[in-house]
Length: 216
Ligand code: ADP
Ligand code: AMP
Image 1 (spheres, helix red, strand yellow):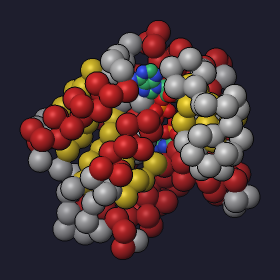
Image 2 (tube, helix red, strand yellow; image 1 turned 120 degrees about the vertical axis):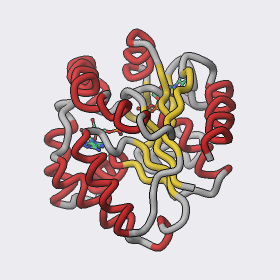
Image 3 (cartoon, protein in one colour; image 1 turned 180 degrees about the vertical axis):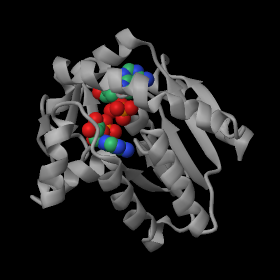
Image 4 (cartoon, helix red, strand yellow; image 1 turned 90 degrees about the vertical axis):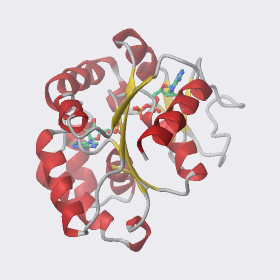
């Protein structure tokens, strides 16, 4: 099963993928998380990427396609994976098609989480992320049991720099101009399903499972 989870920043892709990868035994491939991990490890790629990320801009297609290409070649991505946050431009979608074609593979389903702009802003500004394991919380909608501490690993929670209002606005604009056109790209293939993301975590998850059942 090869799935792509789409939606604007803050739609709930990361939150839903945490459950999906466990239930369906998928390899989670989140380009945002890969860049953040590279930065945590002080790698030149991570440091270069973070210059764009913190401003709310996209990392170049070249760099991003290359890290995905390498990631897809690893054995744990051979059969089942879930892509979150990639592709984000039509050029990336085309590059992904070529990579998968070379592997004699293809995407089985694209799930697009639909959320309105006000909710996106609330979700991003209140988001807190674990420094150690990357788990996601929200100050109001999914608070940790102990303030500032990750429920899963005890790590410290922080606010991503790109979740500050200025970056958020930039990211939403980029989503509209660069990422949204991909919806059309996949819907023409008949593998795209829209899911209402303005519901509780559990209700969104239930709808995603139902949509996957329809396409796969
Ligand atoms: P994305 O990966 O799409 O950027 P996240 O999964 O990180 O989005 O979610 C963004 C923020 O919104 C997080 O703080 C998360 O806890 C919260 N959130 C996600 N889904 C919901 C939901 N259905 N209801 C309320 N808050 C949500
Ligand atoms: P995310 O964790 O998906 O919210 O991504 C955080 C940031 O990483 C984005 O705002 C971009 O700056 C960068 N990023 C993640 N995925 C991509 C991608 N596919 N193409 C370009 N930049 C990306």
